[in-house]
Amino acid sequence: MYLQGHTNKQVLDQYKEWKNMPASDKIVTALGTHKYKIILASWAASMYGSWVFVNRDKVMTAPQKLVQARMYAQAFTIVLLLSTIVLAMKEEEVKKNQPKPLPEWKKVLVEREAEAMQNKQ
Image (cartoon, rainbow, N blue to C red; front, side, top):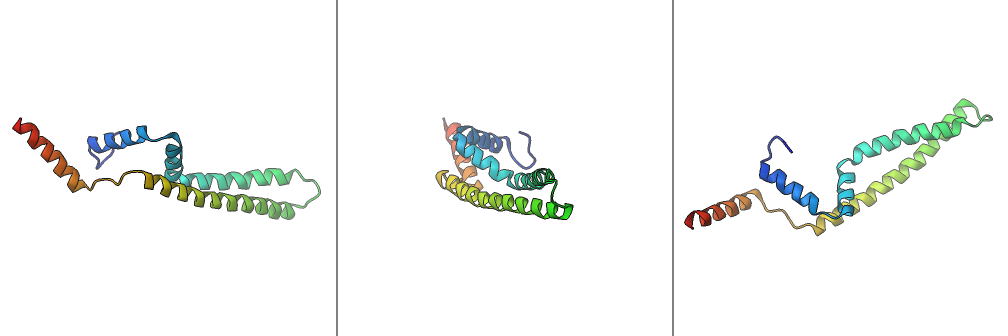
């Protein structure tokens, strides 16, 4: 919870917002945050997995196996890219349901007004 450039209040507000999210929104947010890592790891796993799958064939030559493994990996990559489009649409849906954040200057004004009210009492 110690981030440079963020006040404790901002971090606490983000934490409260995260805790109040439904599980489906948390999943979409986490996937969106780490999507490039997930895409890269999935692509590498598909390359390796397709090679292991195709390499079991005793009839094909090594170049044929390589081409076949690449084709399987390409098919998986296309499915992966289509799923990122769906994820982007879900992220937009989640953002629509969340209230728009207050600009920093409005937050400061609200805090100062609250402090002024407390000082008057």
